[in-house]
Length: 118
Image (cartoon, rainbow, N blue to C red):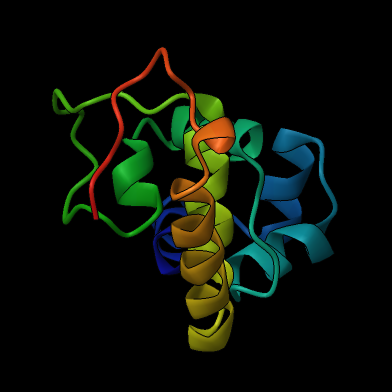
């Protein structure tokens, strides 16, 4: 998460200081910044709130951190997206194949929500 590193440095904070402010170890902050661990949704929200930026900016989906009106994802969708982004190409292909297979099984679909077409 390059933007996390950028935000921390812009704020003049060390990894240790940021971790202390948010109740996590310096090593955990390092893992997040280096992309070796993907923070869960609640941690992403804590970072975004701490630096007063959008989740899209924090995750590299927007060029600035200004809050803009967007379609909202629920927490499960955000977590799934975060996990998916942390995977290598092979992992992403496996997940996509798995999802496409499940999409074809009627009992695996939620009949209360709109179905997404590929």
